[in-house]
Image (tube, rainbow, N blue to C red):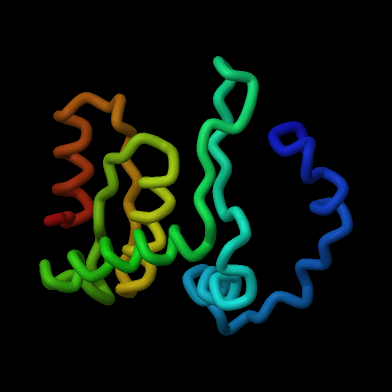
Length: 130
C-alpha cells in the first residue's frame, strides 16, 4: 500500500482465490494482452519530473518480449535453462523477464551495480550461459 498508494483500494479488495492455479505468469500476461491490449501495462515514474516519464501498453510489451523470446530460442534457450538478467529496473527488465518465461526458462536476476566478479560467480553457480 505504501509503494502503490494510487492502487491501495483496488489491491485491498482483490480476491486472489479466484486466480487459475494451472496458468503461469506468462499465461496471465497473455490474457491481459488479449483483453486490454491498449491499456497501460507499465508506467515509469520520474521523481525528478514529479510525473510519469514513460508508459508501455500490454501490446507493446508483448511485442518487445516476443522479440527477445525469439532471440532466446535462436540461441537454443528453452525449458530447463537458466537465463541471467543484468538489466536496470524498468521496461527492459520486465520485457526480458517475460521473454525468459515465454520460452519456459528460469530467470536469475542480478543487479547491474554488482561487481563483475559477483556476476561471474552467479553465472557459474547457476550454470548460466546467456
